[in-house]
Amino acid sequence: MCGRALEDRGVRFQDFELEGLKTVDHIAQLGNERAAWFTDSEGNVLCLHEVMR
Image: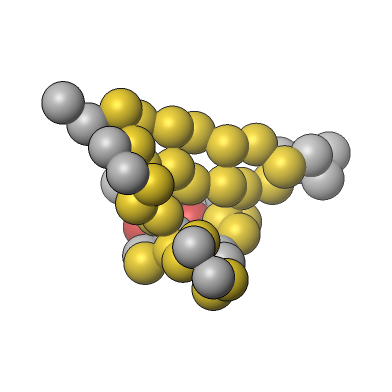
């Protein structure tokens, strides 16, 4: 499921623009990993990581 579909279902992504950490379309590229942060219905921040091979 893509980010737009998740947003349509109420997922609220957190975006960052810091030195060394910037999200583009809600995704940050971190070396050989990609990551996205979002909040759940309880207000907890969750993070998903994908290792690129």
